[in-house]
Length: 333
Image 1 (cartoon, rainbow, N blue to C red):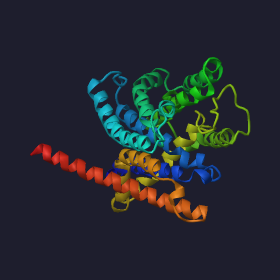
Image 2: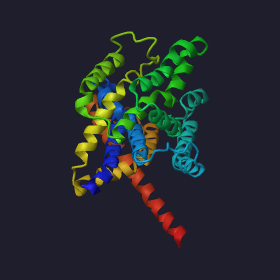
Image 3: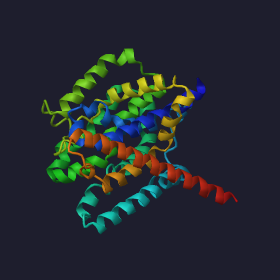
């Protein structure tokens, strides 16, 4: 059981990266499929796993996490940005070669490619974690404190920044701003310290689903408590959503731990290589589009496009892992 438990977070990451590729493959259909309830939970799940693992390691220690650790900081910079810059360089070269490069788009989107914002968001998230950990300890995990802190960024964008920044600029900043995910840290803290139970939070989880639907499909005007982007891309992704994200994580963590090692091997590999797969999908969706599939039926073309995307990303990540392993062996010689 312990062996299975140790790979459970990799299995969750594997599911999350599959959700990313599927979501980016099915833009025309996913919103109608209620993607915010499942596919669009990918990034929240990734961040939840990160916070959960950090807080789990600290649950038996009285002192908060160290705020500054140069070695770990440099390590995460190398792990995140060396491969990101490599893939981003390929994407920029392609964009320049095809005359599709836009400096404005590059700046506002924090890069080119599906999810180019994520490494910048993740870095902020990782840096905020120690402060959040200290806050949760001092407030004794008071939910009202967590809600108050999580509401501040929303009101900041709707009522303060909106007075002197354009909607386009606000949308771009919101996209890469990790402050909107602080409540995920709170929920992960509860789970890591065994303070969360489905029975205790079931009503709140139901309310979270209702909120997600209302905010995603704009059934109510939620201004000024919740910031809304002009293209509605991040609607639903607000702090009340993360009760539901916590529910998904808890269900997956509980049930995936029961999966036998042999059956979980492939999915675990996907989870372990999720970062390279994520970068590979950035490249894939830059090089190819659904219109490249010579099939008249939109649904069939989407299915084939998604299958092509999965194959491309998994094969690319596998080749990179083989090359990396080879290089590590050469260094030891």
